Length: 193
Image (cartoon, rainbow, N blue to C red; front, top):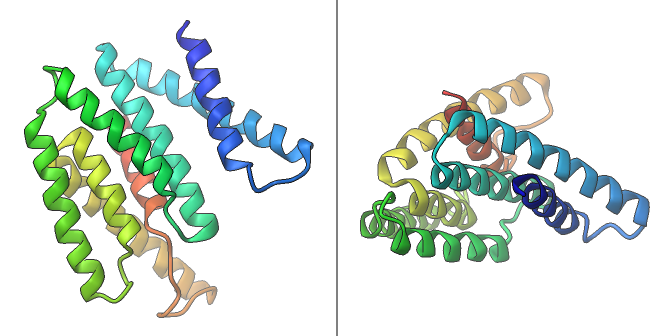
């Protein structure tokens, strides 16, 4: 039954990612790729976490982060409909599950969002508001400490990637890079650790 859910979630994700593609062959390819990635994440999370709730949270947030990260990479924007799905799921799980920190996670998400939106406005787009939404979404599931660790790892990854791009001559100091793919990579690194 779990594999059916994983295939359905992968299919929905693939359909979401391929909605701007017009030909059916590309749409089917995207759905197949998303299903394979979804199955891989399922195996990774099932191997790492024995508790069903912990598995589900890591699995769903990984799917959300990878999907949002890909859209951010491709189009340099964060899809708010996926953020809304994550927020609804996060609030529901925080209010119904004794395993999560409920109000503490909610407060850390709100504080994270407010601080990062302020940073975004002060940096005049150097740090996007969409990134603030994603970081707040992560805080809703994992709390403030996880946000700090994840943010530091993502900053290191983006710095290394930026340095490589600068050395290769593919970017300059004013080139905008999406940040959510680095958050997704940092999240997957933390799942493995």
